[in-house]
Image (cartoon, rainbow, N blue to C red; front, side, top):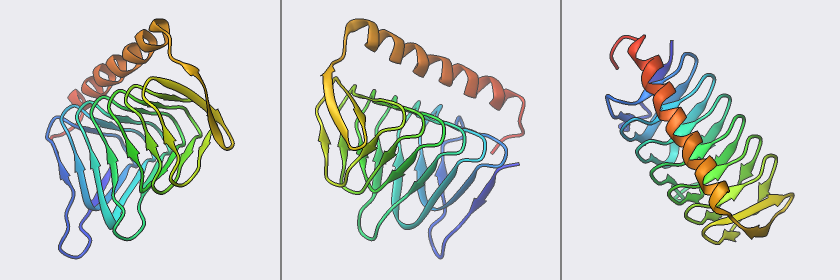
Length: 174
């Protein structure tokens, strides 16, 4: 079963359509939007600053979301965050995809519709422009996304909304 904890006077605000997988942990000042999914063994701690997760966002297995003081983590709508990612006090714009094992650090901004390749490290304050493919350690933009890339990212988002809603149908209500 998942765990939800308040932190002092802050309690997670989770839309009833969101799916929380077993062994996920959500604490403090966290907001999770409609049809979003938080997968197995993911930890979202809102005990330093807010974490705001939009609609139809999927945060995949074993990811960690946290913040620095006065620096929220904001994830807009329709974002995919791959397995074992760390997001810390950054801004992820809508339709972006963060590849598995990536780390996004304080003040980084991932542009709308951008794709961060697996295993990448986005340095503090780094701005990735919209519709870009970036990867590496540190991450660098390598090219603009193709229409095929965008279609594949949309497919992944759609499948995770469907999977999340399927698994949610097997659980008790939040």
